[in-house]
Length: 227
Image (cartoon, rainbow, N blue to C red):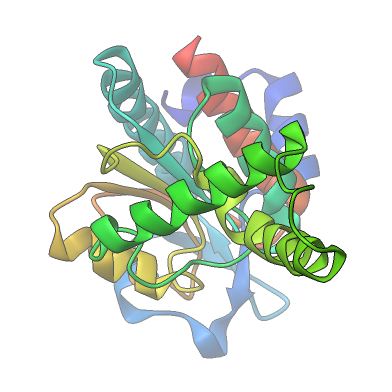
Protein backbone atom coordinates (compact mmCIF):
# COMPACT_ATOMS: atom_id res chain seq x y z
CA UNK A 1 0.00 0.00 0.00
CA UNK A 2 2.67 2.55 -0.97
CA UNK A 3 1.98 6.26 -0.90
CA UNK A 4 2.44 6.71 -4.64
CA UNK A 5 -0.65 4.61 -5.41
CA UNK A 6 -2.91 7.15 -3.72
CA UNK A 7 -5.23 9.26 -5.82
CA UNK A 8 -5.56 13.01 -5.33
CA UNK A 9 -8.95 12.37 -3.76
CA UNK A 10 -7.43 9.94 -1.27
CA UNK A 11 -4.61 12.36 -0.44
CA UNK A 12 -7.15 15.09 0.25
CA UNK A 13 -9.15 12.69 2.42
CA UNK A 14 -6.06 11.72 4.41
CA UNK A 15 -5.00 15.32 4.86
CA UNK A 16 -8.45 16.12 6.20
CA UNK A 17 -8.10 13.47 8.92
CA UNK A 18 -4.83 14.92 10.21
CA UNK A 19 -3.31 11.46 9.90
CA UNK A 20 0.26 12.69 9.58
CA UNK A 21 0.30 15.16 12.49
CA UNK A 22 2.45 14.05 15.43
CA UNK A 23 3.21 15.80 18.70
CA UNK A 24 5.48 18.74 19.52
CA UNK A 25 9.16 18.16 18.79
CA UNK A 26 9.97 18.46 22.52
CA UNK A 27 8.38 15.04 23.18
CA UNK A 28 9.64 13.26 20.06
CA UNK A 29 10.99 9.80 20.77
CA UNK A 30 14.51 9.43 19.29
CA UNK A 31 13.64 6.10 17.66
CA UNK A 32 10.78 7.72 15.74
CA UNK A 33 13.03 10.13 13.84
CA UNK A 34 13.50 7.83 10.78
CA UNK A 35 9.73 7.83 10.30
CA UNK A 36 9.22 11.59 10.41
CA UNK A 37 9.11 13.78 7.33
CA UNK A 38 9.49 17.28 8.68
CA UNK A 39 8.00 19.77 11.07
CA UNK A 40 5.29 22.42 10.94
CA UNK A 41 4.86 25.02 13.68
CA UNK A 42 6.88 22.88 16.12
CA UNK A 43 4.64 19.87 15.35
CA UNK A 44 6.29 16.76 13.91
CA UNK A 45 4.98 15.55 10.56
CA UNK A 46 4.93 11.79 10.13
CA UNK A 47 6.27 10.65 6.75
CA UNK A 48 3.15 9.64 4.73
CA UNK A 49 5.08 6.98 2.82
CA UNK A 50 6.08 5.34 6.12
CA UNK A 51 2.48 5.57 7.29
CA UNK A 52 1.01 3.85 4.26
CA UNK A 53 3.74 1.22 4.12
CA UNK A 54 3.34 0.33 7.80
CA UNK A 55 -0.46 0.31 7.54
CA UNK A 56 -0.32 -2.09 4.61
CA UNK A 57 1.92 -4.51 6.52
CA UNK A 58 -0.30 -4.31 9.60
CA UNK A 59 -3.43 -5.03 7.57
CA UNK A 60 -1.83 -8.10 6.00
CA UNK A 61 -0.82 -9.38 9.44
CA UNK A 62 -4.29 -8.86 10.95
CA UNK A 63 -5.92 -10.48 7.91
CA UNK A 64 -3.73 -13.52 8.45
CA UNK A 65 -4.67 -13.79 12.12
CA UNK A 66 -8.40 -13.39 11.46
CA UNK A 67 -8.44 -15.79 8.50
CA UNK A 68 -6.88 -18.49 10.68
CA UNK A 69 -9.53 -18.03 13.35
CA UNK A 70 -7.26 -16.19 15.77
CA UNK A 71 -8.67 -13.68 18.23
CA UNK A 72 -7.55 -10.07 17.98
CA UNK A 73 -8.03 -8.08 21.18
CA UNK A 74 -8.83 -4.47 20.24
CA UNK A 75 -7.69 -1.82 22.72
CA UNK A 76 -8.41 1.91 22.75
CA UNK A 77 -9.40 3.69 25.95
CA UNK A 78 -8.92 7.30 24.80
CA UNK A 79 -12.21 9.07 24.00
CA UNK A 80 -11.09 9.56 20.38
CA UNK A 81 -10.56 5.81 19.91
CA UNK A 82 -13.42 4.17 21.80
CA UNK A 83 -16.12 4.18 19.12
CA UNK A 84 -13.85 2.96 16.32
CA UNK A 85 -12.35 0.19 18.45
CA UNK A 86 -15.71 -1.04 19.72
CA UNK A 87 -17.20 -0.84 16.23
CA UNK A 88 -14.69 -3.10 14.51
CA UNK A 89 -14.53 -5.49 17.47
CA UNK A 90 -18.33 -5.90 17.48
CA UNK A 91 -18.30 -6.48 13.75
CA UNK A 92 -15.70 -9.24 14.11
CA UNK A 93 -17.33 -10.59 17.31
CA UNK A 94 -13.97 -9.98 18.93
CA UNK A 95 -13.02 -8.81 22.45
CA UNK A 96 -12.21 -5.19 23.15
CA UNK A 97 -11.12 -2.84 25.93
CA UNK A 98 -12.41 0.74 25.85
CA UNK A 99 -12.83 1.56 29.55
CA UNK A 100 -9.43 0.79 31.06
CA UNK A 101 -6.87 -1.97 30.79
CA UNK A 102 -7.30 -4.33 33.73
CA UNK A 103 -3.84 -5.45 34.80
CA UNK A 104 -3.40 -9.18 34.26
CA UNK A 105 -5.84 -9.62 31.36
CA UNK A 106 -3.08 -11.55 29.61
CA UNK A 107 -0.53 -12.47 32.27
CA UNK A 108 -3.14 -13.50 34.84
CA UNK A 109 -5.62 -14.86 32.33
CA UNK A 110 -6.96 -17.69 34.52
CA UNK A 111 -8.04 -15.33 37.31
CA UNK A 112 -9.44 -12.74 34.89
CA UNK A 113 -11.38 -15.49 33.08
CA UNK A 114 -12.93 -16.59 36.37
CA UNK A 115 -14.03 -13.01 37.10
CA UNK A 116 -15.37 -12.67 33.56
CA UNK A 117 -17.38 -15.89 33.87
CA UNK A 118 -18.77 -14.72 37.22
CA UNK A 119 -19.85 -11.44 35.62
CA UNK A 120 -21.49 -13.15 32.63
CA UNK A 121 -23.32 -15.58 34.92
CA UNK A 122 -24.53 -12.80 37.21
CA UNK A 123 -25.64 -10.70 34.24
CA UNK A 124 -27.55 -13.66 32.75
CA UNK A 125 -29.30 -14.38 36.06
CA UNK A 126 -30.27 -10.71 36.35
CA UNK A 127 -31.73 -10.74 32.83
CA UNK A 128 -33.73 -13.91 33.56
CA UNK A 129 -35.07 -12.53 36.83
CA UNK A 130 -33.33 -15.22 38.84
CA UNK A 131 -32.08 -12.67 41.37
CA UNK A 132 -35.63 -11.85 42.49
CA UNK A 133 -35.41 -14.54 45.17
CA UNK A 134 -32.97 -12.34 47.09
CA UNK A 135 -33.92 -9.45 49.36
CA UNK A 136 -34.29 -5.98 47.84
CA UNK A 137 -31.06 -4.92 49.49
CA UNK A 138 -29.20 -7.89 48.01
CA UNK A 139 -30.73 -7.28 44.59
CA UNK A 140 -29.56 -3.68 44.75
CA UNK A 141 -26.04 -4.82 45.62
CA UNK A 142 -26.06 -7.26 42.70
CA UNK A 143 -27.29 -4.51 40.36
CA UNK A 144 -24.48 -2.20 41.47
CA UNK A 145 -21.96 -4.99 40.98
CA UNK A 146 -23.22 -5.75 37.48
CA UNK A 147 -23.14 -2.06 36.55
CA UNK A 148 -19.57 -1.67 37.82
CA UNK A 149 -18.32 -4.85 36.16
CA UNK A 150 -20.05 -4.09 32.86
CA UNK A 151 -17.69 -1.19 32.13
CA UNK A 152 -14.66 -3.43 32.60
CA UNK A 153 -15.79 -6.85 31.41
CA UNK A 154 -18.55 -6.36 28.84
CA UNK A 155 -16.12 -6.03 25.94
CA UNK A 156 -14.13 -9.05 27.09
CA UNK A 157 -17.02 -11.52 26.78
CA UNK A 158 -15.59 -13.07 23.54
CA UNK A 159 -12.17 -13.53 25.19
CA UNK A 160 -12.57 -17.27 25.71
CA UNK A 161 -8.85 -17.87 25.17
CA UNK A 162 -5.68 -15.84 25.00
CA UNK A 163 -5.69 -13.58 21.92
CA UNK A 164 -3.45 -14.30 18.96
CA UNK A 165 -2.70 -10.57 18.63
CA UNK A 166 -3.48 -7.14 20.08
CA UNK A 167 -4.45 -4.00 18.21
CA UNK A 168 -3.74 -0.89 20.27
CA UNK A 169 -4.40 2.78 19.68
CA UNK A 170 -1.48 4.60 21.35
CA UNK A 171 1.09 2.15 22.70
CA UNK A 172 2.44 4.74 25.14
CA UNK A 173 -1.00 5.14 26.69
CA UNK A 174 -1.28 1.37 27.10
CA UNK A 175 2.20 0.45 28.31
CA UNK A 176 0.85 -2.25 30.64
CA UNK A 177 -0.98 -4.00 27.80
CA UNK A 178 2.12 -3.88 25.59
CA UNK A 179 4.30 -5.18 28.41
CA UNK A 180 1.94 -8.10 29.13
CA UNK A 181 1.77 -9.02 25.44
CA UNK A 182 5.55 -8.90 25.06
CA UNK A 183 5.97 -11.11 28.12
CA UNK A 184 3.69 -13.77 26.56
CA UNK A 185 5.10 -13.21 23.05
CA UNK A 186 1.71 -12.11 21.72
CA UNK A 187 2.21 -9.88 18.63
CA UNK A 188 1.10 -6.27 18.97
CA UNK A 189 -0.19 -4.00 16.21
CA UNK A 190 -0.30 -0.40 17.39
CA UNK A 191 -0.91 3.09 16.07
CA UNK A 192 2.37 4.83 16.88
CA UNK A 193 2.77 8.60 17.13
CA UNK A 194 5.93 10.71 17.20
CA UNK A 195 6.25 10.40 21.00
CA UNK A 196 6.19 6.57 21.03
CA UNK A 197 8.96 3.97 20.92
CA UNK A 198 8.25 1.97 17.72
CA UNK A 199 10.57 -0.87 18.75
CA UNK A 200 8.22 -1.97 21.55
CA UNK A 201 5.57 -3.28 19.15
CA UNK A 202 5.75 -5.87 16.39
CA UNK A 203 3.67 -4.08 13.77
CA UNK A 204 3.66 -0.29 14.23
CA UNK A 205 1.33 1.91 12.21
CA UNK A 206 2.89 5.35 12.02
CA UNK A 207 0.13 7.91 12.37
CA UNK A 208 -1.78 10.36 14.51
CA UNK A 209 -3.04 8.40 17.54
CA UNK A 210 -4.85 11.27 19.27
CA UNK A 211 -7.28 12.57 16.62
CA UNK A 212 -10.66 10.87 16.22
CA UNK A 213 -10.76 11.32 12.44
CA UNK A 214 -7.28 9.84 12.03
CA UNK A 215 -8.03 6.80 14.22
CA UNK A 216 -11.33 6.18 12.45
CA UNK A 217 -9.60 6.38 9.06
CA UNK A 218 -6.97 3.80 10.07
CA UNK A 219 -9.55 1.43 11.55
CA UNK A 220 -11.73 1.75 8.46
CA UNK A 221 -8.77 0.80 6.23
CA UNK A 222 -8.20 -2.25 8.42
CA UNK A 223 -11.90 -3.16 8.22
CA UNK A 224 -11.80 -2.92 4.43
CA UNK A 225 -8.62 -4.98 4.34
CA UNK A 226 -10.13 -7.77 6.43
CA UNK A 227 -13.23 -7.87 4.23
